Image (tube, rainbow, N blue to C red):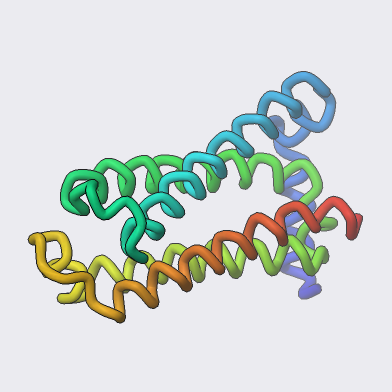
Length: 162
């Protein structure tokens, strides 16, 4: 680990919020629960939307569910990042050296990038306007499900590598 990074991680571990959550079992438990809840918001809403894109729930108009599900997922992702950062601050040096944690962070970034690329594409705009769902959109939906499943798996794996 580069010395500057190690120094920054040690400073992060010495902050008041990190000390508070490290010293309070109930506060740490509540923070962890908030993190899990936020992951549920992300995965639940994204997988529901992805399944619709893959052809399930055809009776539900895409335009009617895509916007609220995307907003719930975005709020969940924001909350997961915030709570995850505070959880990280409790043991940053250990987490920064944990391959499962590093994989989870990479997968979350990949999942967020996948959705951003999808939403910037013309095929998404056409599908949202009531047009046919293109194969590229379906492929992005399948990728999304696989990426988020892998991120959850990596997140669970973190504790087994400590």
